[in-house]
Image 1: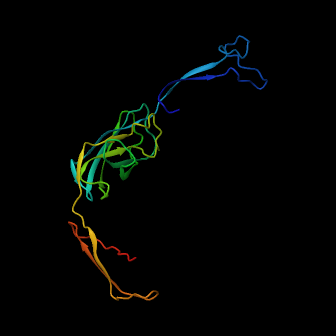
Image 2 (image 1 turned 30 degrees about the vertical axis):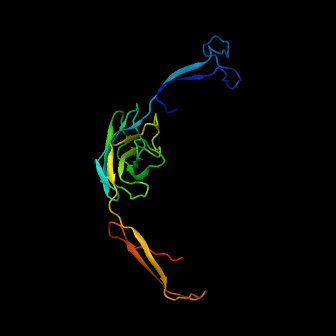
Image 3 (image 1 turned 90 degrees about the vertical axis):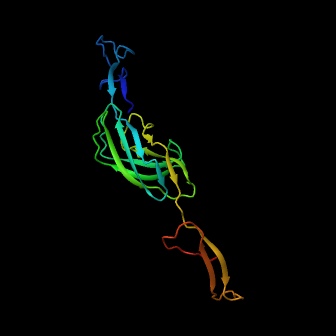
Length: 219
């Protein structure tokens, strides 16, 4: 049981000694009484609880470029977080809620915050690269952070571990766009089973130069 609070433990009365006698908790020599011969005790359970209290980044950015992200996580629970390490995850999202269409930007290894006492926080900053993705164009986005994404640290509440930045305006930079203008065999007649030579013309109709090598495939 990890949810913080006051709990009651009840033992008996159907607990027997080696001779088969039931409990006589009240000492009246009548064993096994349903109420009188039970033992009860109150136990207070304390547990940590990570909450992402802030996520900050620049107001604008560009896909394909780095972006600095700073976030703060507070232990809002009643006990220290004693796991030796955990991971915080950074997402790119169209909204302020972690969902299936979000892109994971980075997993950040937190190894120097334990034991994180109740009502104390840690702050981290890292740089992430915004990916160029055909499904993400110019628009308004959010940077989300989920703390302890692999649940290394048992917590009082595992559903409140995420936080979101303010809106970030992102743009797609000029990109190359390769198109095939023409394909032409050198020979007018191609014989099956024999080699042939093919010529083709490739053109970059995009707004930026190519910056890497690539393969052209012939079918």
